[in-house]
Image (cartoon, rainbow, N blue to C red; front, side, top):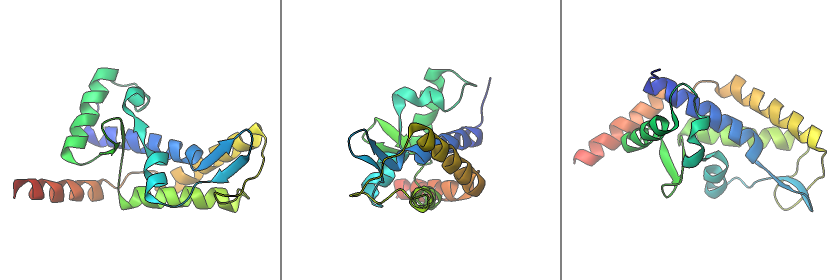
Length: 161
């Protein structure tokens, strides 16, 4: 079955939102839960996806085909490598806003900033993860393709100079 680049970007985006809903909270069985810091390192590391798990993006095409297609989107500048050639993510102003929104969601539900912690039951954490994902999907459901393609055009014109 075929999948368009736009549909693949949308699938990557939805997986990225799912990752953000869980990863903006640092969890430790000894210390408790806290919200990660709002910096570039955490933005990238909390929203990236590993290439060896790229099959989670879509089940409409095979693993190898998804890898090739993601690498092609990276070559075009529509998706970025987060760390070397191991992890990827959509890097855009909208993605940064989604990261900040996920942080704000957890903070508004009583989870403190990094450096402090709170203990929570696993059920409560899972409930908040689901609620955060739903909130992210309601606010950022569709990736802003125009911004990504504008980025592609800008990158493409810089490469030809």
